[in-house]
Image 1 (tube, helix red, strand yellow):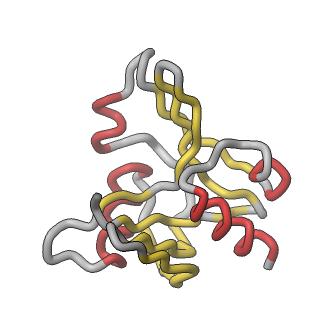
Image 2 (spheres, rainbow, N blue to C red):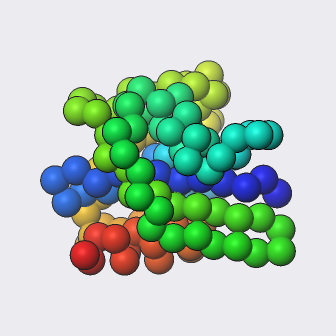
Length: 131
């Protein structure tokens, strides 16, 4: 498994998530992705946010680091440029009726009812939204 960096983007007390719908799977994930060779977790987070949403990361603050035997996942509170996210990168290329991506803004209450994966993301976002 690959190390991953994910962005916690909050505006107006709402969290930006990807709603993924595939055959027999319906779940949510944070913007972010794999850390490339010779790339820091911060650099990966900035790159992935730009590729996936079109938004510029203005600042990052490490919220939580999860380390297992297989991989490391870093979650960053990201302050981003103004504007609405626009689907881009590999997600835009893969977009189809069978493999659907949509941005959604969810509040703290909705966070408890959506299938946000992995569980580490849900725990971290819950902590951040409660501050």
